[in-house]
Image (cartoon, rainbow, N blue to C red):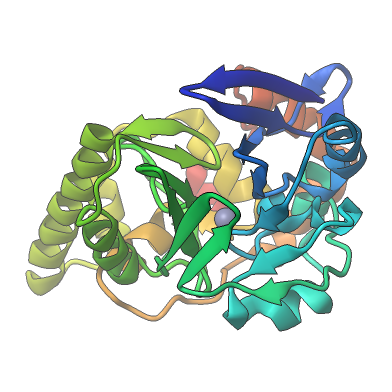
Length: 301
Ligand SMILES: [Zn+2]
């Protein structure tokens, strides 16, 4: 399913895989001055292709290699530009975990060209800013004081992150983009004002400081999680379990502390539990925010 609306002359295209009439999770791509920024997920690639069928597209710009951003790139005949660091991954995408295959789809090979620091497309200039953290290859695009920020910016409600994320790098990337003039950040999940981007950076800095104080007092990562996130919405538990802890609060705290990520405990149990035909039900439940997890948090520890 796709949903389209215009925000300040930018066409925002939300897309996601529909199961039983509900979209499991939305991601957003953008169309601005004949450029397509990110491409949605593999499951919606052909809807995206149809949408752009009668539109002029000069090029496709990819912020990072995750399947919900590059997954539709393979359907375009126009040139695709992506971060140099992930060209090989795009060309030979590894098999992604089962839950991501259900939500987004397994990516197909994309033969992209490397992005340069600055790119010109007729009258449009694109500044390519390296913004690692969410992923090792992540970049943001600045066009006409609009920041296309991929998955760089989240909100103050954030409690979890992916195991591969490096929040020390994300903090530096946020400081870097805030040196540029822009009004809004157009991201994979949200469009945020500059003030909200600053607010998010301050949230991360404050959380990092508190986590470091507790860690220096001798608290473990698990103890820090319980202190810093006393009220946990059920969808956070569900996200942790459903992803086999690829997304978790502990990942987030460990990343803010600059610690090496640990392998998941009890992952086999969790994956077995959720692969038993409950996957789609859980997705639907998650999507409607009528969240229900039949096991207490401790069962996953
Ligand atoms: Zn991402």
